[in-house]
Structures are given as structure tokens and as C-alpha cells.
Amino acid sequence: MLTPGLTFNEKGHLSVEGCDATELAAKYGTPLYVMNESLIRNNCRRYTAFIKDNFKNGSFPCYASKALSCLEIYRIMAEEQMGVDVVSGGELYTALTAEFPANRIFFHGNNKTPDELKMAVECGVGRIIVDNLTELHLLDEIAAEAGVIQKIGLRIKPGIEAHTHDYIRTGQIDSKFGFSIENGEALEAVKEAFECENLELCQLHCHIGSQIFDTQPFTDAAKVMLQFFDVIHKETGKWITELNLGGGLGASYTDSDSPLEIEEYLTPVAEAIKSTCEELGVPEPEFHIEPGRSIVGEAGTTLYTLGNIKEIKDIRTYISVDGGMSDNIRYALYQAEYTVLNASKAQGNVVDNITIAGKCCESGDLIQEGVSLIDPQVGDILAVLTTGAYNYSMASNYNRILRPAMIMVKDGNSRVIIQRESYNDLLNNDI
Ligand SMILES: *Cc1c(COP(=O)(O)O)cnc(C)c1O
Image (cartoon, rainbow, N blue to C red; front, side):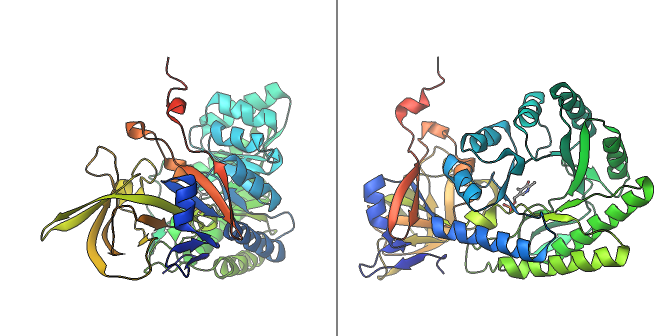
């Protein structure tokens, strides 16, 4: 299975949006992150159009920029009328440098530092999603000093946790993020937030997991959150006006993944919100979600050069590539599955049971196991699909390996959006 925009051309080479992968590798070097701009923009448009048509005025999706953060991605998100969510001063700084409008930035995190909170208040971020009471009171003081009323949300644990194929409805009190509804701390936090003179609580936020293929955890979360809106109104006489369901829609990594289409996932959510609001008499809130993986995941392909082949008879074949956990740590971290292809060949003998190894000095530095490749030979270009999310953003200089370049392709053209690091870059902060 190929991700959208990928085909094999008449030369038998993988092509990304009309660009021959072997030519891209020759031109820009490997490892190389290749991003499909049309797919990113199209995913954004599907989210924004659906939300504009089906949710209350003022609703918009925020791209979760931890999935992939760099100047160009924030420029694209601004052009596509998205909001963004950031989780650190570094992401915020990058977004602001790209001139992303501050009032459409939501700032998350379970331990934002005083400096980060100050920076966020001073630049005028749209919402700060408060995680704990220490942060709430610190932020109240920071807003007072800055002489502003800061709009905030609260991070809520709705008691629903979902991952890929299954989800559970209880036992989520044990999470480092946010306030639990179940044990009463969420209601206490809401009451304290309403008391803060320099803060305006408008949003409740939850994020129930990632790589989710089912719509029910989202509709259940929406209902639990709206029931809590109603409880808050009964207890305080005030309405929360914004519901944020976080991210989580899955992407396709292998043939066994079949994520919902964006519209398929949002339709039941819109219906659940409307019907629950009617049933409970809750005024329909503005709606936000924070998709990361489902916007950039399938838009990314990593190209490597095959360096050597080690056949261990009757055991397996190792194929080493010129990158590894330094540019894609997800297999080493949690055995994440990926599709690996020989981008140099569309036909030939298939070799099975291949382990794709990186070049880092760690036995666990693997990109994937159990891979089948067409006639792999030294010098071939290998492609790993669906690497747009949580690859570059998790990359490191382990072993002082240089982080790869990232290029954007569109309609047969390519351009660099992140330069390959140089040896000199490695010394930037060394004294
Ligand atoms: C990780 C995260 C997201 C994005 O999740 P995806 O699975 O990539 O869509 C959104 N919001 C918050 C608060 C997150 O922590």
C-alpha cells in the first residue's frame, strides 16, 4: 500500500508527487525527509471546511505542532486558516517567528515554566490550557503583572483513554496531565479558575490518546465533557463556552491500518455534540480539535541509502541505512510499525525477513523488522512511509549524527524547508 501522492514511475522508481525519489536523493542527499505539501494543505482544508459547516461560529481546528514543528509548517498553517497548539517556549518561538497569529495559538503542557508562561502572556496567545493549580495561580499573577486578562482552558481527564483499536472508560486518573472529573478535582479547579481575577476561563480541553481508528471514544468524550459543562453551570451559574477534544485521529502506517476519513470521524462527533447539548440544555460551545498525526503523518516519506547487507544464515538479513533512531526513534521507542520499500525498484525478486538497522551504536537502533524488499542492493534508495509526524520532531544528534534535511514537494517541484545540519552546527553551543 502506498500513501497518497506516491506511485512508481516508468523507470520503476518511487515518485512522490511527481518527483522521482532517486533523483531527490541524488540532489539533496540522504537521509532525507520528503513532505507532500498538497496532502498537508488538503488535510487542513478538509478539517477547516467541515468544522466551519458543522459547528458553531468561531470553531476552528488547531494543528498540533509537536507532530512537526518548523517555520514553513507554521506559515502553511497560517495560510490554511488553522490554529496551532504549542507545548513549549521553543514551539511558541518558532510559530511567532513564522508570524503565526498569536491569538490562534493554544499553549499546552503539564509543566510550563514561569518564563514560558510570561512569554505566552506577553505575546498574547489565544488560550493557555492550564494543567494544575500551581500553574493556575502563577498564571493569574503573571497576567496581573502584564495588566491583561488571559483567556484560559483547563486540561481535563474525562476518564476515557483510547489507543488504536481499543479504549477504556475508567482508570485514567493515573495520568500526569490535567484534572480528573471523577474525583472532583476538575470541579474544584473550575471554581478556583473562576475566582482568578486576571484569568477568563472559557475552554475545557481533553486529549484521550493517539493513533485512534474509532469514532466512539471521541463521541463518548464529548458527552462526558458536556455533562460536566452542565454540572459546572448548576454549581456556579456559569457556562463554559468552548469544547476542545484534542488530537488523536490515526494515520495509515501499514496495510493493517485503516483510519477513518476526517469527515467520517467528525460527523458523529458533531451529531453527539448537538444531541447532547439539546438533551441537557447546554448552549452549543465553540468546537476545537488538535489533529497532528492525521495532518502531516502520511505526508512524510524518509529516504535512506542502503549501505550494506548482512545475511545471517537461517536467522535474518540485516540491511543498514545511513540514518536510524537519530531521525526516526519510533520503532526503538515503542515498536511502531512502518512500511519500507525499495524506492529504486518496482520489480524483481522479493527478499523477506529483513531487519532495517540504523547506523547508531545501539543494538536497538532499528527502523523495522520483518520487512520484505524487492532485490535490495548496496546503493539502492529505501523509502520509509508515513514519517511526517513524530520523526523530525523527535530527532536527535545521538552519536553526533547530523539531522537530515527536509524538503517539500508539490506538483513535481521540490524545495528545502529545513537544511541538513552541518558538522559546524554540532559545535554551535560547545565552548
Ligand atoms: C499529542 C497531542 C495532540 C496531537 O495528537 P495526534 O495524535 O498527533 O493528533 C493534540 N493535543 C494535545 C494536547 C496533545 O498532547
